[in-house]
Image 1 (cartoon, one colour):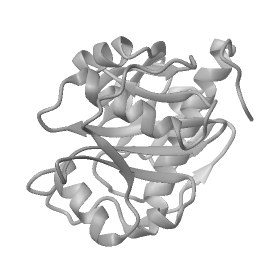
Image 2 (cartoon, one colour):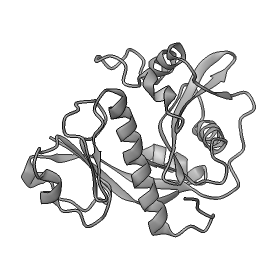
Image 3 (cartoon, rainbow, N blue to C red):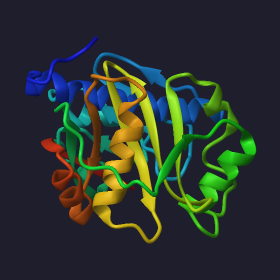
Length: 236
């Protein structure tokens, strides 16, 4: 699947959501929890990974009772911000906006920041340490198995030989999804420009998608991304 630059808004939103579900599935699979993907939901009720949901809605007509059926998930990504999961013991953790960059023109690139793909376990450890200084207390979240997935690119931004920025790009469902963007001592415009250029090189011509909120959303829009629709994450 490929999109032109005037892609239908609904189709692009759907692709962004499915790409995110594919990425979540890849992370869980690397920990031994493959999950189940249907046309309506992504399910993975048995994993307990920090930052990753146990269910993701893929269509806007999924009901709260459908999400809560069977093994009730402890974290849900309500991809269309339409559900009320309060009666099932969940509360809203945060709200965000799906975004997409679809134009050929990218923001000006900072010349002193070099972006490279992480290719080995040692590099992945250094990347995660820069992403989460001090660790997250439960061992590495991003395992070397991800590096064997051709769709996954862990990208590191270096300045003067130091790892100062990073982003993960996942190519699936006709788009390139970006997540886990971070930067140390970088202006937001330089960080976003570098991330978009680095991700764009992986699959030229494909839309770059993701989701952001707050000041990060404002920075994404300043870099040329446009909003697609709201999402909510619910947790127990």
